[in-house]
Amino acid sequence: MMIARAKGATQEMKPRIGITPSPAEDVVPHGTSYRNALSTNYSDAVEAAGGIPLILPPQHADNVSAILDALDGVLLSGGGDIRPALYGDESTHPKTYGIHDLRDSFEIALAREAITRDMPVLCICRGIQLLNVALSGTLIQDVADQWGPEIQHRQSELGIPASEPSHTVVAEPESLLARVYGTTSIATNSFHHQALRDLSPELVAIGRAPDGIVESVERPGSTWVLGVQWHPEMMFRAHEEHLRPFAALIEAAVGAHREAVAADD
Image (cartoon, rainbow, N blue to C red):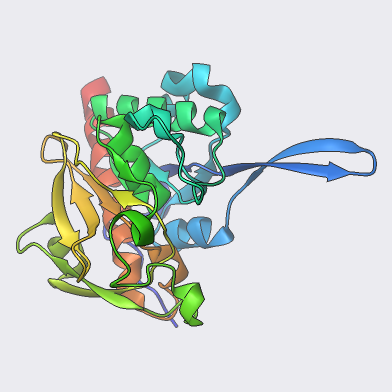
């Protein structure tokens, strides 16, 4: 299947998109190794949309400013849960998992600085939750327990392949989400057990699942910031419309790069 590259993303000006990985610890016979893991779906989607994917190790939180100097856009990826204390929860739900404090602190600093610079940011699954927390929002620690079981938001429990949709998201008309996808009804996959609870005052909910869970946000104060709760990087090969968030990110990054170059001239 041929996938069109983003408008404006030429060979001479491919924007550099930084992607956050998931830290992991491997215990092997010769010792313990620490790795930064990232599904190739993310980098493949960025590349297919016309960008250059670069992985951002969270061990370099002190260098966020220098890291962003080298980028044209940011992609906050999926992964484990965020420490509840960061959004004011005094207890940790039994199903909360995969907390990594270094990743939390790095990504919060990265998101805040990227927004301060008005850089294009795409936030996927954990990414939309991280964005909300970074901007003073809160999370539902377990949707089935603390919201309701109307929809199974982990479609793997239903045996549905990752590349296929399990529910629809209704986008607000004229929202960034509706403009990116070209429709107000989007068939999405779903692999999360947490979700946004109290929305950051800086964000606007622009897409919801049938059970009312917020599935997409934008930040009106930014030129281009989009958060989605699903995983378009798992779907774009089988359903070409799910390349559109990446293509829109690349187009926004090309525009931001051109403005930066013009400002330096």
